[in-house]
Image 1: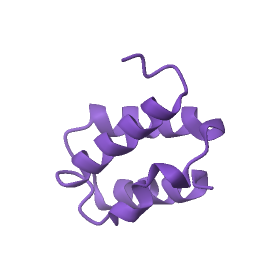
Image 2: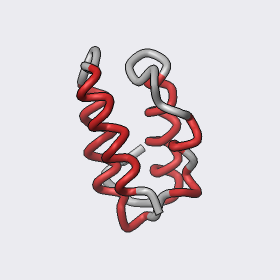
Image 3: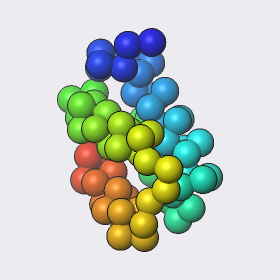
Length: 77
């Protein structure tokens, strides 16, 4: 899977993967914020940057979690 390509399948994969990581890293995130319907492909690259950040980290501080949630909120439709 080439996540550098902005398409619906990749968008859903990224959001699903973030949701899975949520259980380990983003314990305060409401899963409703990760519904692919709420995201536009025009914001795919911003979402991919967030995904990459989460994927490379073992854990996140409270302030990083808060910043992540704020960023997710800002790129939703």
